[in-house]
Amino acid sequence: MLIRGGRLVDPALGIDALRDVRMTDVIVEIGEHLEPAPGEKIFDVKEAVVAPGFVDMHVHLRDPGDPQKETFETGGAAALHGGFTAVACMPNTRPALDDPAILDDLLRRVETSAVGLPHIYPIAAITRNRAGKELCDYPSLARSGAVAFSDDGAAVADGSVLQAAAHAALGVSGPFISHCENAALKSLSAALSECSVVARDLRVARATGKAWHFAHISTRMGVELLRFARRSGTTVTAEVTPHHLLCTQDEARSLGTAAAVNPPLADTQDARALRDAVRDGVIDVFASDHAPHTEAEKRGPDPPPGFSGLELALGAYAAALPDLPLLRFVEMLSWAPARILGIPGGTLRRGSAADITVFRDEPWRVDARALVSKGKVTPFDGWTLPRRAIATIVHGRLLYDARAASPT
Ligand SMILES: [Zn+2]
Image 1: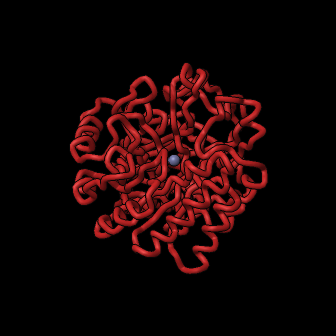
Image 2: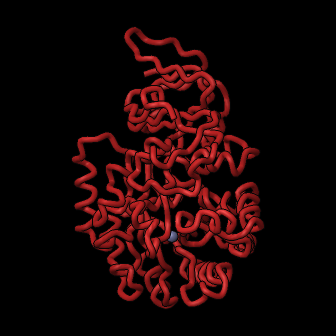
């Protein structure tokens, strides 16, 4: 197939220009005005951007254990609609992703699925059942496909357990990912709760030398700690979510349980500090923290934290940072997460897999009822967002095509 007429944005190649892309299941050729070969399929993408496939490194697929919330198939479909060719799924499932046999089973079901899917990379737990006590077997989990390790949903409460875990995982590729909330401090202050874990985990990262990534940074103080760490030579990476970039306690108040999330929405100064941290490079990656629940659960008396994100993330990032250069925007969604996780992709260099996201600046209205995810709750319901995916190609297969989808 020949993708013709688009603006190719590839940060690893340093290209932001009109280019055509020829592909099979891999990228064959990039050039100006490529002539179609006899019988070659042509995909015209004038006025659209052609980018390396987007990677969402923080997704909850709820598989195994909670098919009423999501499965790898419904979450995979949501990812494709959102323009993601790869997702990394968090281990707070039932059972938790803490054992190679559980990863093997998940990936076997993914591989034998009849539906087209994005690449799905599991993140394994740091401690057994994410209980914060017993270490997992990191080399075995990595052999079964784990690309990172996290007890996401909670911090590992005991710093000495975390340090022992980081030591045990030193020879294993794949970073540790911190969920930064200190349960004992949360009622006092969300910023303090976040920062106490960020500070501790920066220290453990530095002491052990383990590769480290910070999930969903949400406060100004959290950003400042990361900035300080970088200045003193600690190489860690960090991500930010669409809702922390754009929503604040005002939304939390007006939306109630629909906006309940961990870490909680902060204030306008925090949101501004997060946007600045993206602009100046303290934050490396956009990640949705797609966390679907059933509507009954979200509207019930004890709403679980989190909501859908995959299908609106791309638009929300653009709404938060309309001034961000496209090369950097694309880097934060492709090259950066792929390098952090050590997975293929992130560039359309010749010979690499044909994982491609095509998107366009075009206002569209979020209708939570119309999401393909089983999670139909999002604080962005009814918002108009400025950017959307129009095609998602995985290994050369056009798995999402907005021209074929019903208009919204
Ligand atoms: Zn988390």
